[in-house]
Amino acid sequence: MAARSPRVVAELGRPETPEETAARKAEDSLRHRQRQTVRNLVLALGASLLLVLVIVLLVPRSDTPVDRDVDVGAVAVQAQAASDDPLAVPELPEGWRANAAELRTSTADGVTAWYAGYLTPGDEYIGMYQGLEANPTWVAGLLASTLASGTVTIDGVEWTVYDNRRSSADVGNARYGLTTEAGDSTFVLLGTASPEEFDTIAAALVPAIEAQD
Image (cartoon, rainbow, N blue to C red; front, side, top):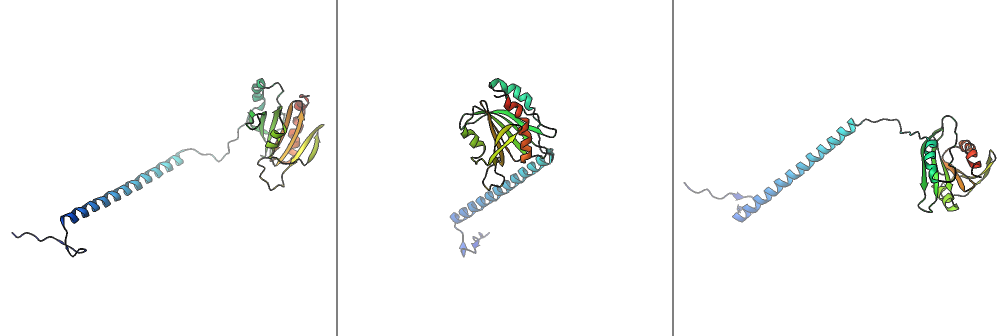
């Protein structure tokens, strides 16, 4: 039987040499492995996305925002051991609620303050700070270095007013603020509530303020 002539490769116009045949097969093998790798990556990505989808569907969700109700008085009793000054716990009307209460120490100036965060009946925020042996730098830091706009007297206590509601500056939560001093304590109220709601909490703080003298 006659030997079969080598196959002519169209691109070359002649039969492949053994070296060219080996190179072609090596390149075909490389391309095959690359296609397999890409296919495996796509399959792995699809499996991961499917797993995420299953987790999202299985985890229960609620449209109701988390709204903690903190007992400020109970926290103040525990925190009082760290302060010689009586810590303020305002008695507020129905509809007010607290979502935070703790002692905070400023890293900038080392001032320790008793803090309670309140939500008004209209779901606006007011933060109450009682700085213990505080300084003007601490007050300025809380109020975003804004300037006082006047004073107001509430149930016999004079407060300095910081009204930033019309300011275009970034003042964070300090859209409105009140400050006063009594004994070794500096009281700062700041937040997004209305002046009338600030008056309510300021009036509720009068017994605690008078107890500082």
